[in-house]
Length: 239
Ligand code: URA
Image (tube, rainbow, N blue to C red; front, side, top):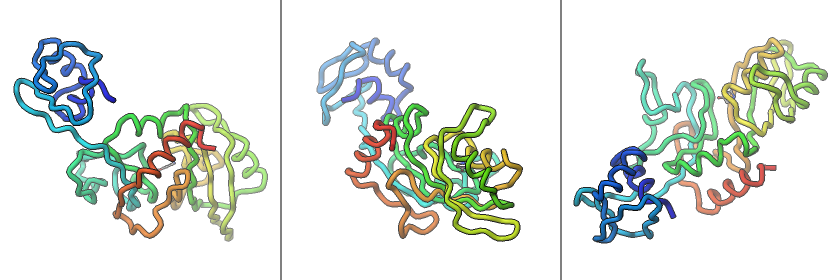
């Protein structure tokens, strides 16, 4: 159960701080009774009014999208570039759980549940992510070993990872990279560390979650057991 100020903020009426002020100013009623304590947790289905106006409680929703190439994960862009919002048509205000780069494709979770999003992306939780990577060169055995044991990036050592080569040509190779963290541009920086460039990047999986038959730009509702399982795995450190 969420606190009253959080419920008001989630309904888009005010920021959490402003909602606290509204409560302290006795402008909020729950089931017809003025509530002026900040710790109050309204029951599910309670009628909440601010200045006599009923607020709509938003249900929590969860989706998985196959993020298309050349789209931003933000809701709008000052340069008018395509965003994932161009593909989404749901009544709730949803956002992506973490971000994929403009040119990265694949598994992206969308939700309006901030607590769930924090659990999934918080650095303390180590949910498994699998990336399909194509680079401008061929990783040597020593480089694979180094990548797997941890490399020093400007924000610290990477956690142990797994590399599985899937294709090798003269000046290009593809591999699956399994990592347990989600730092900004992590895969690209791990590849750049060896002097190569990422040519193609697709997130194949977050834990057990894949896009399966979703085409780029398509999304589906996550089943309740999938949401539960993702939360459980994140809390168990995803391994
Ligand atoms: N790592 C990257 O470098 N980019 C992404 O989009 C995701 C992971």
